[in-house]
Amino acid sequence: MSFPLRNLVVVVLLALTACVPPSSQPVGQRGVVAYDAPRDPHSFARPAEAKVTHVALDLIPDFTTHRMTGIARLSIQRALSADSIILDTRDLTINRVTDGQGNPLGYAVGAVQKFTGSPLAIALRPATDTIVIHYQTSPDAAAVQWLSPEQTAGKRLPFLFTQGQAILTRTWVPTQDSPGIRQTYDATIHVPAGMVAVMSADHVGEAGQRDARGLAVYRFRMAHPIPPYLIALAVGDIAFRPIGSRTGVYAEPSVVDRAANEFAEVDQMVAAAEKLYGPYRWGRYDILVLPPSFPFGGMENPTLTFATPTVLAGDRSLVSLIAHELAHSWSGNLVTNASWDDFWLNEGFTTYIETRIMEELRGRPYAEMLRELGRQGMQQAVVDAGGPAAADTRLHLELAGRDPDEGMTDIAYEKGAAFLQTVESVVGRPRLDAWLRSYFDRFAFQPMSAAYMLAFMRQSLLTPEEAQRINLEQWVYQPGIPANIVPVRSAALAKVSEQADAWKIGGATSALQTANWSTHEWLHFLGAFPETTPVPRLAELDRAFRLSSSGNSEILEAWLQIAIRNRYEPAFPALERFLTSQGRRKFLTPLYTGLAKTDWGRAMAMDIYRRARPTYHSVAVNTIDQVLNWKQQ
Ligand code: BES
Ligand code: ZN
Image (cartoon, rainbow, N blue to C red):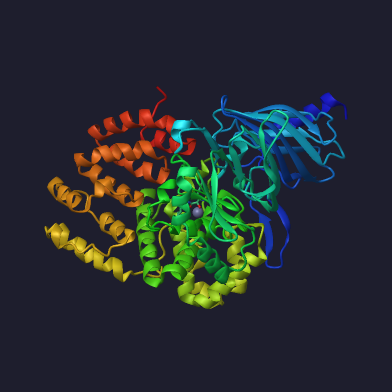
């Protein structure tokens, strides 16, 4: 085919991509039921025609222009008849596309679509098995946050990190950005001398050797096929402290020792998870503590969990977050939601496992506190979604045309966990544990849908009577919380409730017995506050327990919500400090939402946000822009 003609084919293909959803593609029998890979509504890829199997990156991040420039060399697997491959991109500048031998390939970038970006269609010659894309990222690439030295702990060097989940990898890597299309990857990253690069992959070769430009070179390799949302990079003034033989922590030098102490139990966590669910298959398990603008609590990037510094409470009281990200090494990273409609398969299973790991470490009463607080989060999520009839209270969602972020609620996490807790209550732990282990073994490194998981559960875990008693279909496909949800009850939190009730009806603050309260007992106490509390009572509490200056980010955030509801002004300096010193979306959202409810609060929120917005990551900005109805000014 002559060159211009091939270009024409690509253009026609792009037009088709824009309007015709390809039918779902069977990826083969797996012995249970025929597995129809659900179509991913957030990707333009047509993997049955041609799919990416390996991504090789060679990138230079430029801390002055806030662009990464370089090459993505993609290995592809294709049907013989395929004359093009379609990738996902967003805000990328494509400079040149060739095959593995350097011969130019025709390509076309399609129109920009909301949330999903643009398809990049590349014409294939009959023998093309490699495509080489020369490209550059935009300074506004949504996955990437470029931090100035002032935004770091050390204040000496800039920093950059990426956040791929859910559909942001396409803003820095041109590939098929669907969780159902697994790819191995390797990368060569060139950084200014004195800076360190880390990725969600094994380090290979000698780190930091100089290239011809004098840049320090870091090489990585992920030999397991992973969904592309798990490709992750951070560059900065990064130090390392080992914890165990296969664990350790990366962070800025002034943070790394504190982090190593906070996470000292990580080896016990890995051992507990392995005992329950089988071998940890990713080699090392390290944790990178990021600067405070990291928009999430944690992100399960394989071999290297990314974590917020707000987890460093000093007393290891918030480390269930690490148990959660570690748990994703099974649920999420080994067995992965095939599309974001089944995000709950990642997060619900992981939340269930998180509390099982913590139960191994800290005992049953501790795990029960976590579970009960989780249930409170679930109930709140039902209210936030619009009540138990709301479609978004379903586990399996239909997110086509929406930002997959909208599915990121406690329904996925806590209703999802409650589903497994309810299954556990019917079949008992030994059977559920054995089944989960077989599920991870059998589907390791594969995508999973709710329908297929349920079929596997019916086939290999439940008797027909048990399946009926649980009512699988209602749990997964219907809104609301099924009546057969297994209750959870924490004796410790029940005692806190008694004290909270007494205090609420005027009991003396000095009568509160809080000396032995853990962080979770405090969170339960604060979570039980009514809509309004007299300001003098709050002042009393603040004086007694110094809540406004709590060094525990979760307790502080819960307290600040109460302060906002009651216009308790003595806490406002702490509120402003909190909103301007960290960018974790889970903390920002309720605080800005609370402020936005009143005129005085809204004015305060807008004033703070105007200054803080440039320091937040795009995913937080996205959410808070909506909360405050922010118009670019
Ligand atoms: N995978 C999620 C974070 C995520 C979800 C990022 C969806 C982008 C889109 C991660 O495992 C997570 O759930 N983090 C939680 C902490 C956890 C303890 C519940 C968070 O960041 O709050
Ligand atoms: Zn998670």
